[in-house]
Image (cartoon, rainbow, N blue to C red):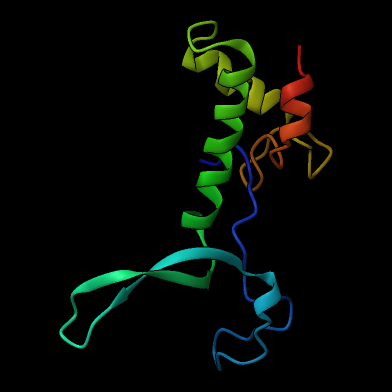
Length: 115
């Protein structure tokens, strides 16, 4: 079940998953990635282009953090933060909640202006 949508990056509109061709990295998200030595031991970090829920979920968590920061650490219960995220999301399908897009695309500005 999807509650809300968040940009997680993808390979672009011309990507063919069967042939793995036509990808456009400008649709991906920049993330930190580990760097390993020749023996496979982690020796630091760098940056790489990634896509998926691992790129999308931190953005939702960030909006939750902004809401909590605005209202105060103990002012809202977790369910209230969730409701603000739901109510402030931009509807994608113009039909309200649905199984494919949930309540819509997260919107930090709307969430911070939500009453």
